[in-house]
Length: 486
Image (cartoon, rainbow, N blue to C red):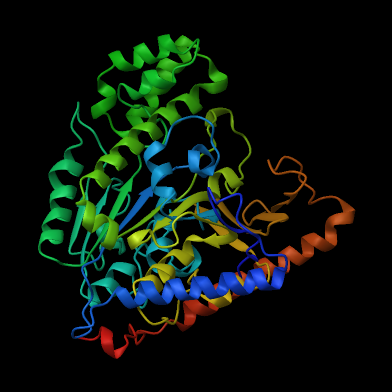
């Protein structure tokens, strides 16, 4: 993927009295030089000098499915919903323009774990016998396991079956929401996840833990006291009705949806903000649970040896989908996601990067930061390579494949093109003047040249995906420097 030119590299809460560079070239040179030095220092300390073994490192990847970046305080949201995530973001690198490659949970998660587009790894919502990751594609846990990491996944969604390839490389693969709550106890987090982390920390073993929750999926019904914190006038009756219906806790996803609409239609709450109220309350609960997880890690180990990656598979439209007649599923609220990377010793903490990145970039970035040599075959790019900072503006690519809908999009900082391959419809949005994607310019004569350019970009991308799918080889191996070998 060609990355957008990094327009801003800034540190939050910087000293206002500090001197600023008067020359753009000098500023870019210093930025590249400093980042290079930091990366060299970090990757060199990620390994032991004795026999090239890794120092104990805990890598935790949290995927909060459905989390919109613009509903977090660290991204400018004015409502107090994410104090713990906001605090961690000050110790981290924060990407302001991160995009998922699909609105399908399974497709996006597999992209995160393989650095391949959904067209290539072929995990989508069509199902069938082809719903299995080819052995020619290595997953992040497989590579980390080869490097000596103990690996475990705690995933909430039963639609992420191990037979599809999600389990590959994990020593343990537990189905059950790690942030789920039964009455007052976060059972899996307190009884399974935290003890697992503690045991490996005590044994001085490097570990990779994936935590996936879908508690923001519709309908998000938060527990108390978080629900009352965000209730607005006119919504109290709805909240009380939800609280009194204990079947919400044990009901299936489909039953929860049916129960929600039953209460919703009977009580007619303040509809304009109800979805946002429930959503924010659930984020607040997840944020507090996340803070509990971080506080459970011994302070010294957390500061020196923990890497955190927090992101989402997709966002949310926050509207009544029964009245949503637009079949486009690739609007920015659905594909733009948070991406926060916290490194040991708070390395690069407070850095805000505004270049466009994809979920395909996460895996190579993580591997680069823990000290592996560059690997071939990824469709994403390690984000902290000096060359990445100097690239020309590029684009991001996303797609969705459902039984009745096949869509793709190419997006730059100024334009966005979407095509529905089944319906034969197209959308073209000028994001500078139309950031909410309301004014479709695809049919206007004066934009036909631009539309054709984006068609060509999309055809080029899908052509490369098809070529890669045909030419994957089984002999791709992890390359390690001599110091990294046992």
